[in-house]
Length: 252
Image 1: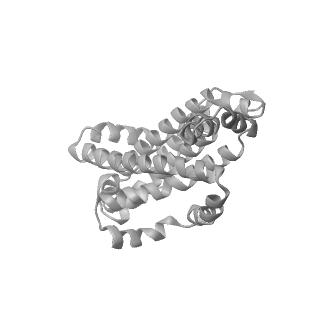
Image 2: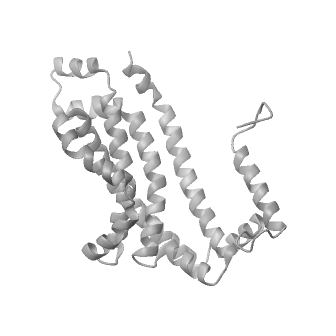
Image 3: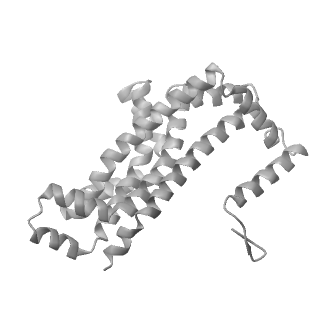
Protein backbone atom coordinates (compact mmCIF):
# COMPACT_ATOMS: atom_id res chain seq x y z
CA UNK A 1 0.00 0.00 0.00
CA UNK A 2 1.26 3.47 -0.95
CA UNK A 3 0.34 6.78 0.69
CA UNK A 4 1.52 10.08 -0.83
CA UNK A 5 4.14 8.18 -2.78
CA UNK A 6 5.52 6.31 0.27
CA UNK A 7 5.26 2.55 0.64
CA UNK A 8 3.66 1.59 3.93
CA UNK A 9 4.44 -1.63 5.82
CA UNK A 10 2.21 -4.67 5.40
CA UNK A 11 -1.13 -4.63 7.25
CA UNK A 12 -1.14 -0.82 7.10
CA UNK A 13 -4.47 -0.76 5.30
CA UNK A 14 -6.09 -2.85 8.06
CA UNK A 15 -4.70 -0.51 10.71
CA UNK A 16 -6.00 2.57 8.88
CA UNK A 17 -9.45 1.03 8.46
CA UNK A 18 -9.41 0.04 12.13
CA UNK A 19 -8.60 3.60 13.20
CA UNK A 20 -11.38 4.95 10.99
CA UNK A 21 -13.80 2.40 12.45
CA UNK A 22 -12.83 3.40 16.01
CA UNK A 23 -13.29 7.09 15.20
CA UNK A 24 -16.74 6.57 13.65
CA UNK A 25 -17.78 4.40 16.58
CA UNK A 26 -16.64 6.93 19.16
CA UNK A 27 -18.62 9.76 17.56
CA UNK A 28 -21.65 7.41 17.41
CA UNK A 29 -22.37 7.71 13.71
CA UNK A 30 -24.67 4.71 13.94
CA UNK A 31 -25.97 2.36 16.61
CA UNK A 32 -24.99 -0.52 14.35
CA UNK A 33 -21.30 0.52 14.32
CA UNK A 34 -19.89 0.40 17.86
CA UNK A 35 -16.26 1.38 18.54
CA UNK A 36 -13.70 -1.25 17.62
CA UNK A 37 -12.26 -1.13 21.15
CA UNK A 38 -15.67 -2.05 22.61
CA UNK A 39 -15.91 -4.97 20.19
CA UNK A 40 -12.53 -6.32 21.28
CA UNK A 41 -13.51 -5.97 24.94
CA UNK A 42 -16.69 -7.94 24.25
CA UNK A 43 -14.69 -10.61 22.45
CA UNK A 44 -12.46 -11.01 25.49
CA UNK A 45 -15.57 -11.49 27.62
CA UNK A 46 -17.26 -14.15 25.45
CA UNK A 47 -14.39 -16.09 23.87
CA UNK A 48 -14.25 -18.70 26.67
CA UNK A 49 -18.01 -18.96 27.23
CA UNK A 50 -19.68 -22.31 26.57
CA UNK A 51 -21.89 -20.86 23.83
CA UNK A 52 -18.94 -19.37 21.95
CA UNK A 53 -16.74 -22.47 22.27
CA UNK A 54 -19.58 -24.70 21.10
CA UNK A 55 -20.33 -22.40 18.17
CA UNK A 56 -16.64 -22.34 17.21
CA UNK A 57 -16.50 -26.14 17.28
CA UNK A 58 -19.69 -26.59 15.23
CA UNK A 59 -18.65 -24.02 12.65
CA UNK A 60 -15.06 -25.27 12.50
CA UNK A 61 -16.13 -28.89 12.03
CA UNK A 62 -18.57 -28.02 9.25
CA UNK A 63 -16.03 -25.77 7.55
CA UNK A 64 -13.19 -28.32 7.66
CA UNK A 65 -15.42 -31.14 6.44
CA UNK A 66 -16.78 -29.01 3.61
CA UNK A 67 -13.37 -27.78 2.47
CA UNK A 68 -11.99 -31.33 2.71
CA UNK A 69 -14.54 -32.61 0.19
CA UNK A 70 -14.11 -29.52 -1.99
CA UNK A 71 -10.34 -30.00 -2.20
CA UNK A 72 -10.23 -33.77 -2.61
CA UNK A 73 -13.00 -33.78 -5.21
CA UNK A 74 -12.24 -30.48 -6.90
CA UNK A 75 -8.51 -30.90 -7.57
CA UNK A 76 -8.68 -34.33 -9.29
CA UNK A 77 -11.77 -33.25 -11.24
CA UNK A 78 -10.07 -30.07 -12.46
CA UNK A 79 -6.90 -31.93 -13.44
CA UNK A 80 -8.87 -34.56 -15.36
CA UNK A 81 -10.82 -31.83 -17.16
CA UNK A 82 -7.58 -30.10 -18.10
CA UNK A 83 -6.06 -33.24 -19.62
CA UNK A 84 -9.15 -34.83 -21.16
CA UNK A 85 -11.00 -32.81 -23.79
CA UNK A 86 -14.15 -34.95 -23.77
CA UNK A 87 -14.51 -34.68 -20.00
CA UNK A 88 -13.80 -30.97 -20.17
CA UNK A 89 -16.54 -30.34 -22.73
CA UNK A 90 -18.91 -32.51 -20.72
CA UNK A 91 -18.39 -30.86 -17.31
CA UNK A 92 -17.22 -27.29 -17.99
CA UNK A 93 -20.67 -25.83 -18.81
CA UNK A 94 -22.06 -27.17 -15.53
CA UNK A 95 -19.08 -25.95 -13.53
CA UNK A 96 -19.51 -22.46 -15.00
CA UNK A 97 -23.24 -22.52 -14.26
CA UNK A 98 -22.71 -23.40 -10.59
CA UNK A 99 -19.78 -20.99 -10.33
CA UNK A 100 -21.93 -18.04 -11.44
CA UNK A 101 -25.25 -19.16 -9.93
CA UNK A 102 -26.55 -17.76 -6.62
CA UNK A 103 -25.83 -20.87 -4.56
CA UNK A 104 -27.95 -19.60 -1.68
CA UNK A 105 -30.99 -20.41 -3.84
CA UNK A 106 -29.97 -24.09 -3.78
CA UNK A 107 -30.07 -24.32 0.00
CA UNK A 108 -33.84 -25.11 0.17
CA UNK A 109 -33.27 -27.94 -2.33
CA UNK A 110 -30.48 -29.37 -0.17
CA UNK A 111 -32.74 -29.13 2.87
CA UNK A 112 -35.36 -31.25 1.09
CA UNK A 113 -32.82 -33.80 -0.15
CA UNK A 114 -30.59 -34.13 2.91
CA UNK A 115 -32.61 -32.75 5.81
CA UNK A 116 -31.94 -29.97 8.29
CA UNK A 117 -28.83 -31.38 9.91
CA UNK A 118 -25.09 -31.29 9.64
CA UNK A 119 -24.99 -33.13 6.30
CA UNK A 120 -26.75 -30.29 4.49
CA UNK A 121 -24.45 -27.70 6.07
CA UNK A 122 -21.33 -29.58 4.96
CA UNK A 123 -22.66 -30.07 1.42
CA UNK A 124 -23.52 -26.37 1.16
CA UNK A 125 -20.02 -25.43 2.32
CA UNK A 126 -18.53 -27.79 -0.26
CA UNK A 127 -20.64 -26.33 -3.05
CA UNK A 128 -19.52 -22.81 -2.23
CA UNK A 129 -15.83 -23.76 -2.44
CA UNK A 130 -15.47 -26.50 -5.02
CA UNK A 131 -16.12 -24.73 -8.33
CA UNK A 132 -13.26 -22.24 -8.18
CA UNK A 133 -10.94 -25.08 -7.15
CA UNK A 134 -12.01 -27.10 -10.20
CA UNK A 135 -11.56 -24.15 -12.56
CA UNK A 136 -8.14 -23.19 -11.24
CA UNK A 137 -6.90 -26.79 -11.29
CA UNK A 138 -8.08 -27.09 -14.89
CA UNK A 139 -6.39 -23.83 -15.86
CA UNK A 140 -3.13 -24.94 -14.26
CA UNK A 141 -3.07 -28.20 -16.21
CA UNK A 142 -3.87 -26.47 -19.51
CA UNK A 143 -0.83 -24.19 -19.04
CA UNK A 144 1.64 -27.03 -18.50
CA UNK A 145 4.50 -27.15 -20.97
CA UNK A 146 3.66 -30.02 -23.31
CA UNK A 147 7.29 -31.13 -23.35
CA UNK A 148 6.96 -32.23 -19.71
CA UNK A 149 4.12 -34.58 -20.62
CA UNK A 150 5.93 -35.89 -23.70
CA UNK A 151 9.06 -36.54 -21.64
CA UNK A 152 7.05 -38.48 -19.04
CA UNK A 153 5.45 -40.57 -21.76
CA UNK A 154 8.81 -41.28 -23.40
CA UNK A 155 10.11 -42.63 -20.09
CA UNK A 156 7.08 -44.89 -19.76
CA UNK A 157 5.41 -43.10 -16.85
CA UNK A 158 2.15 -44.72 -15.78
CA UNK A 159 -1.06 -42.62 -15.83
CA UNK A 160 -0.97 -42.38 -12.03
CA UNK A 161 2.68 -41.28 -12.00
CA UNK A 162 1.98 -38.69 -14.70
CA UNK A 163 -1.10 -37.48 -12.81
CA UNK A 164 0.77 -36.96 -9.54
CA UNK A 165 4.32 -36.11 -10.61
CA UNK A 166 3.58 -34.03 -13.72
CA UNK A 167 0.07 -32.62 -13.79
CA UNK A 168 -0.40 -32.01 -10.06
CA UNK A 169 2.99 -30.49 -9.28
CA UNK A 170 3.21 -28.39 -12.44
CA UNK A 171 -0.29 -27.01 -11.88
CA UNK A 172 0.23 -26.48 -8.14
CA UNK A 173 0.49 -22.65 -8.18
CA UNK A 174 -2.94 -22.34 -9.83
CA UNK A 175 -4.36 -25.10 -7.65
CA UNK A 176 -3.29 -23.28 -4.50
CA UNK A 177 -4.77 -20.06 -5.84
CA UNK A 178 -8.10 -21.81 -6.30
CA UNK A 179 -7.94 -23.43 -2.86
CA UNK A 180 -7.17 -20.04 -1.33
CA UNK A 181 -10.29 -18.48 -2.84
CA UNK A 182 -12.25 -21.63 -2.06
CA UNK A 183 -11.40 -21.27 1.63
CA UNK A 184 -12.87 -17.76 1.66
CA UNK A 185 -16.00 -18.89 -0.16
CA UNK A 186 -16.34 -21.82 2.26
CA UNK A 187 -16.44 -19.42 5.23
CA UNK A 188 -19.36 -17.64 3.58
CA UNK A 189 -21.00 -20.94 2.73
CA UNK A 190 -20.86 -22.41 6.21
CA UNK A 191 -22.38 -19.29 7.80
CA UNK A 192 -25.18 -19.09 5.22
CA UNK A 193 -25.90 -22.78 5.74
CA UNK A 194 -25.99 -22.44 9.52
CA UNK A 195 -28.39 -19.50 9.25
CA UNK A 196 -30.76 -21.04 6.70
CA UNK A 197 -30.62 -24.78 7.36
CA UNK A 198 -30.11 -25.15 11.09
CA UNK A 199 -29.53 -22.37 13.58
CA UNK A 200 -26.27 -23.72 15.00
CA UNK A 201 -22.66 -22.59 15.34
CA UNK A 202 -21.85 -18.98 14.59
CA UNK A 203 -25.11 -18.78 12.68
CA UNK A 204 -26.94 -19.25 15.98
CA UNK A 205 -24.85 -16.51 17.59
CA UNK A 206 -25.61 -14.14 14.70
CA UNK A 207 -29.31 -14.85 15.11
CA UNK A 208 -29.17 -14.40 18.89
CA UNK A 209 -27.12 -11.19 18.95
CA UNK A 210 -28.91 -9.48 16.06
CA UNK A 211 -32.36 -10.24 17.48
CA UNK A 212 -31.32 -8.68 20.80
CA UNK A 213 -29.45 -5.78 19.13
CA UNK A 214 -26.20 -6.76 20.86
CA UNK A 215 -24.08 -5.14 18.18
CA UNK A 216 -20.71 -5.42 19.96
CA UNK A 217 -21.31 -9.17 20.32
CA UNK A 218 -22.48 -9.41 16.72
CA UNK A 219 -19.37 -7.66 15.37
CA UNK A 220 -17.11 -9.68 17.68
CA UNK A 221 -18.25 -12.89 15.97
CA UNK A 222 -17.74 -11.32 12.54
CA UNK A 223 -14.20 -10.28 13.51
CA UNK A 224 -13.41 -13.84 14.56
CA UNK A 225 -14.61 -15.15 11.21
CA UNK A 226 -12.66 -12.46 9.37
CA UNK A 227 -9.50 -13.25 11.33
CA UNK A 228 -9.80 -16.99 10.63
CA UNK A 229 -10.44 -16.45 6.92
CA UNK A 230 -7.62 -13.93 6.64
CA UNK A 231 -5.15 -16.20 8.44
CA UNK A 232 -5.99 -19.19 6.26
CA UNK A 233 -5.75 -17.07 3.13
CA UNK A 234 -2.35 -15.68 4.09
CA UNK A 235 -0.97 -19.13 4.98
CA UNK A 236 -2.05 -20.48 1.61
CA UNK A 237 -0.59 -17.38 -0.06
CA UNK A 238 2.77 -18.04 1.60
CA UNK A 239 2.64 -21.65 0.45
CA UNK A 240 1.77 -20.56 -3.10
CA UNK A 241 4.78 -18.25 -3.23
CA UNK A 242 7.04 -21.13 -2.24
CA UNK A 243 5.92 -23.22 -5.22
CA UNK A 244 6.24 -20.47 -7.83
CA UNK A 245 9.31 -22.38 -8.95
CA UNK A 246 7.04 -24.77 -10.82
CA UNK A 247 5.26 -21.94 -12.59
CA UNK A 248 8.57 -20.58 -13.89
CA UNK A 249 9.65 -24.02 -15.08
CA UNK A 250 6.53 -24.52 -17.16
CA UNK A 251 7.56 -21.81 -19.55
CA UNK A 252 10.99 -23.27 -20.18
